[in-house]
Every structure is written in C-alpha cells, then in structure tokens.
Length: 83
Image (cartoon, rainbow, N blue to C red; front, side):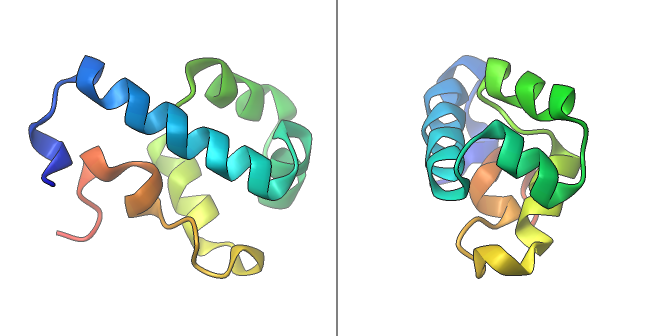
C-alpha cells in the first residue's frame, strides 16, 4: 500500500496501531524515553498524539535493542523513508 497517498485522517489509525505495538513492546512511554535518551515529555507528546515524530521514528529504527522490528518506515510509512 502507498501510504503517502492517504490523508492525515486516513493515517491516524495506522499511527495509533503502530504506536501501541511499540509501547507494548518496550514497556511504556518512560522506558521508551530512556531507551532513546529523549525527555519524557517528548515521549508523552508522541503518545498523546499516537504518532511518533520523524526524528523519533529514526531513533527507534536505529536502536539496536529492538532488532529491526520497528523501522522508521514501519512507524511512519507516510514519510517514505525507503524511497
């Protein structure tokens, strides 16, 4: 599916589902913030929006402990990281 063609509203459920998967996998916003060495307020803002930022997606994608399960492209398919 070409997610770059979907509207922001059409992408909301995709963002929310993938955010929830990530948070369950890492054990919560606090743990994610510690893993990525970002302020807890940043992780909480992502959680409130159910959408991680472009930079946050890159941080997650580059984190070795996640074993490549959560790539930047997977978390933010609308940005077309692989193109």
